[in-house]
Length: 201
Image 1 (cartoon, rainbow, N blue to C red):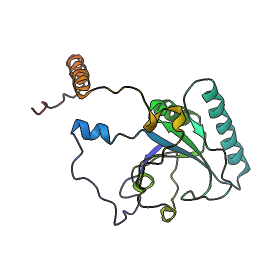
Image 2 (cartoon, rainbow, N blue to C red; image 1 turned 90 degrees about the vertical axis):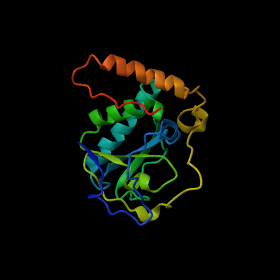
Image 3 (spheres, helix red, strand yellow; image 1 turned 30 degrees about the vertical axis):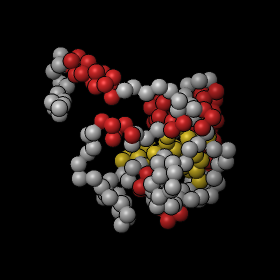
Image 4 (cartoon, rainbow, N blue to C red; image 1 turned 180 degrees about the horizontal axis):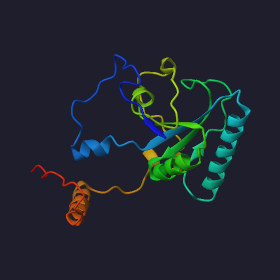
């Protein structure tokens, strides 16, 4: 079960603002794209079966990373007590956008009965509050332990040159629009595919 947090699930803080319209400017969307994510695996620390399941999943992720299935960096420690905003035992997995879908897919299929908090890494507390998702049942978070906003995006593992630290060449806006036009042309033959509106000049 994937549970997306909505406004009915959590109280909005006074600093939280919601845009009235989704952003559609291509450059703005590209500039604000999330490049790094955290997956937090939760387990009730006094439940031996859950603790064992969490450790087995941790070991499996490490083995699959070694085998090249995806890039996922686990923090060295396993929290056996509540830590920061996390109300139960947990551990952290850092994932760059380059392999996000592979890790998300793997955890969806292999988490068993464990819950997984997924949130982006940016400068704002709202990542944990309203920009998050849950695989499995959600837990209440202690957001009082987090800063409202950080001065900089907290880069992790820049030596990998992935995520925000990536040095890979980027597509130009013209190349992206050409790709979009090619996709639209193909989808004109798909009866069930919605059509995109005309592009503004």
